[in-house]
Length: 257
Image: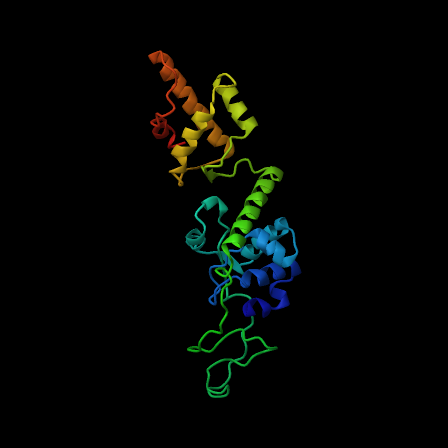
C-alpha cells in the first residue's frame, strides 16, 4: 500500500481510481502480486458502486499501474471458475517516486532509504522488504461465500443491463438456457416448441461441464443444444425409437463449433 500512497498526483489524477488502487493494494502481497478481492468487496471498501469499481480497474490496467496476474492463485481458493475474481498484480516499478538514496551507513546501517512523510517507497538493494501481509487469506469461509454470492449477483445484473450477448463462457451446472435464445434456435431448426426436455438439458450440461476449455456465448450454447436434440430426433426417427439423450457422441460433432 505504501507504493500506492506514494504515487504522485500527475501519475494518477482520478481520485476514484486512486481510491480503488489503494484498496486493491491492501489485498496484494509484499511484492505487489496476487490481489483478488471481488468487485463487491472493493465497492464496500471504497463506497463506490460495483460498476464504477470495474471501470476504474479497467482504467488502472490501461494506465499500466496494474495488470492481470496468475489466475491460478484464485483457483486454489475458489473451485468454480465462474465465481473467481480477477487476480491483479501491482506494477511497483511504475508511477511512484523513489526516495533519495542515502550514503551507506547514514541510516543506522540498515540499508533502508529514509522515510518521506512516514512512507518508505523503496529499499536499498539487499534490504529486507517492509512487512505488508496480504489480507487475501484472512477472511473466513462465511465471508468468502458471501463475497462469491455477491459476485454472482453482480455478474447476473451486469449481464442483464449490458448488451454483452456475445460474451463467451464455459458451461456450468447452474446454467439455464435463455428463453428467447432457445426459442429462436428451436424455430430456426424447424422443431416443435417443446422439443428440448429437461433431461436433454441435464445431459447436455453434464457433458460440457467436464470440458471447461470449451467456451461459447449464451446463444451459441443454445444452438449446440438444439442441434444435438435435432440430431437425436432424426436418428431416433430412422430407428423408429424415441431419442436417446444418454448418447454423448454428438459432443464430438459439435466440439469444433
